[in-house]
Length: 93
Image (tube, rainbow, N blue to C red; front, side):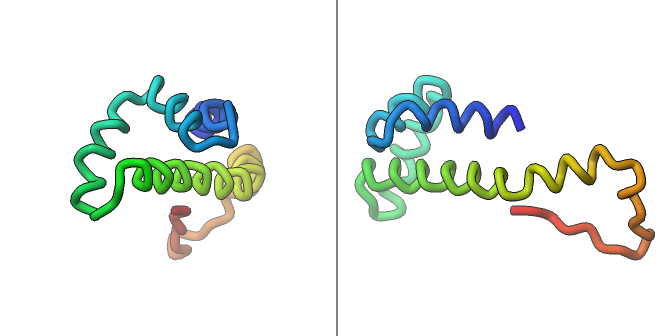
């Protein structure tokens, strides 16, 4: 949850992708290396790779917001642990 909050704060500085990128890379310097190493391999311009990563993080935030209340409700409700040993666990991606 802290991770989502941090990303949300960093990306909410502006609607302009270059300003969002500037904000997020001040906190996570390694993202510039990822773009440098990956853009060429993916046959993308660095700015296009940056935009794809920003969209990835924005999607992550949006998806978390959809499931967060249910996860917390299940976590905080001791009766919600009604899963039998044969019930499969589902991973959220």
